[in-house]
Every structure is written in C-alpha cells, then in structure tokens.
Amino acid sequence: MNWIILIIAGLFEVSFTFCLGKIKGATGTDFYLWGAGFVISVILSMFLLAKAAQTLPIGTAYPVWTGIGAVGTVLIGILFFHEPATLGRLFFMTTLIISIVGLKLI
Image (cartoon, rainbow, N blue to C red; front, top):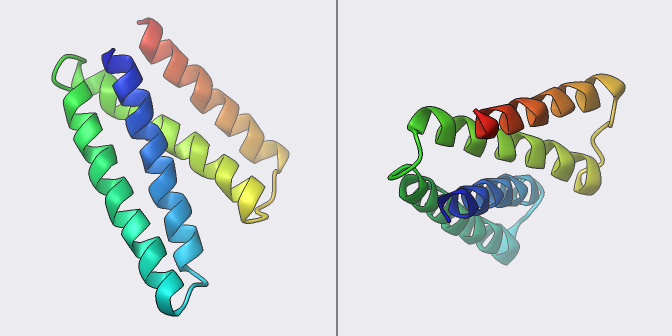
C-alpha cells in the first residue's frame, strides 16, 4: 500500500510542476488558480511522501519520488509545453526509469 501512496505522491509532484509551467504565462484569475493548484499539489505530494516514508526506507522513498517527478516532468514538458524530445533526453529518462525500478527491486 505504501508503494501506491509513494507513486501518488510522485504524481502530485508532476502536478505541481505542470502548474508551475502554466503559471509562467498566466495572468489575472488564471494565475491565482494555477497557483492554488501548485500549492495544493505540493502539500499533497509532501504529505504522501512523508506517509510512505513511515514504513519505506527514506533512502528508497525519496529517490523514487524524485524520479517519478523528474520523468513525469520531462514527459509533461514534451507533451504540453512543446519541449524537444531529443535522443539524449529520452536516453537519460530511460536510465532514470531503470534506476527507479532497480531501487524498488533491491
């Protein structure tokens, strides 16, 4: 169950980076709505990470959480913010995924 909580925490990390990307060009009410999404996502992400770390080793939980966030943020950047999907970015994203899976297995 704590692995599921950790994965959800990582997805909220991706959510707050998405909100940051949307804040970049927002003005008026949109700025505050994306800002609220950012704050809520950060709070939920940190709370769920702390909850998962109660039973999972912090040396595993934190890298997995940041890895989910990093890979998710790269994908969000490519899919929604038209960032380049270069061979190098995809290669290193793949090695990061392999490392996350390795931490889970060990």
